[in-house]
Length: 326
Image 1: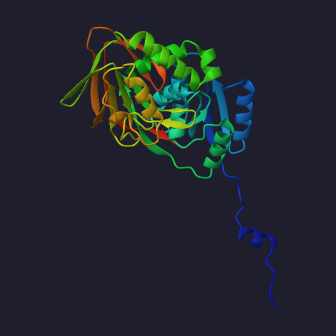
Image 2: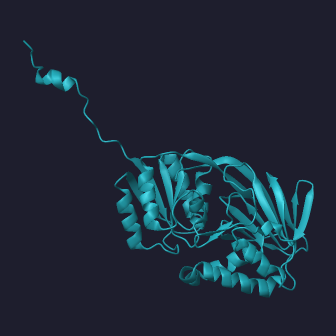
Image 3: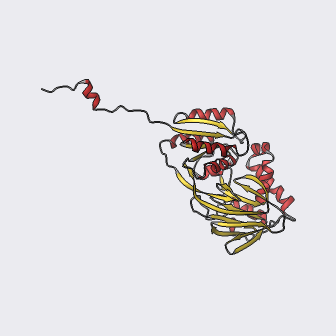
C-alpha cells in the first residue's frame, strides 16, 4: 500500500522560486541634449524599471557627469547609462575609467556615435527596448580609450577644420537641435570658406619616424569617424574599439578643388578618404604628437566636444580601460 507524503515532506522536495534581484542602474541625463525632454526622461525611466532598479539624475554643468560616474562606481552600481549626446558619454567614460562598472548609452544627441558603435539603435524607443533585452543577455566587455593631453575620448578627436566646425556648432545649440547633421554640413562649408581656404593654421603630425604637415588631423579610437544620420562617415582606416591602437589621418591642404571630392569620398560606400592625394592615412600606432607649425593655436575637439585652443596635442591609447555593456 502506497503512502502519500505529508505536507511537510512534499514541501521539502521543492525549493521556492524567488524573484531574481534586479541590477542597479544609474541613468545620467543631460537635460540640455538635443532630443531629451522631461516627458521622454520619465517614460524611459518607467520602462527600464521593469527590469532594473533605476535611479536617474540630471547633470547640472560641464564635468558633472564625470563626478556622478565616479560616485556611481564607488557605490557599486551595476551599470551607468549616459542619456545624452556624445559629450555626455565622454564625461561618463572619463568618470568610469578603470572601474568595473560598465557604461551603456541612450541616444539623446545629434549623432550618438559611440552608442551606435556599440550596437545601440539611434532611436530612443528602440534603444530602450535594446536595454531591456540586455538584462537577459548581460555581457560586459572591455574597450580602449584614446587620450589627448590627459583627456580620454571614446571614438575620435581632431584638430583644425574639424574642431573649428565643432566649436561653431556648439555655440548655436538651437540650430544644432533643429537641423542636426544639415547644420553641421552648412557650418563645415562656411568655416572652410572663411578660415581654411586662404591662410589656415598649419600643423605637423609626428607618428614614429614619420612627420606630416597639414591643416587638419583626425585621430580615431574606433570606426566610423561619425555618422550623417545613420550613414557612417569613414576617415581613418583600421580603427577599432578593442585594437589597442589609434588610427589617424592628415588633411594636407583644403582647396576649392579638393574639398568637394574629399566630401564625396566620405559619403561613398566604396571610395576612401585616405586615398585622396591631399589626405594621408597614418599606420596604426599607440602614440602620436601634433603641434602647431606656425605658432598659431590649434582648435581641439574630443568626441564632438570642443576643448579650446592648444599649441600641441599628445595622443596615446589606454587598452581595455573602459567596461561597456550593450
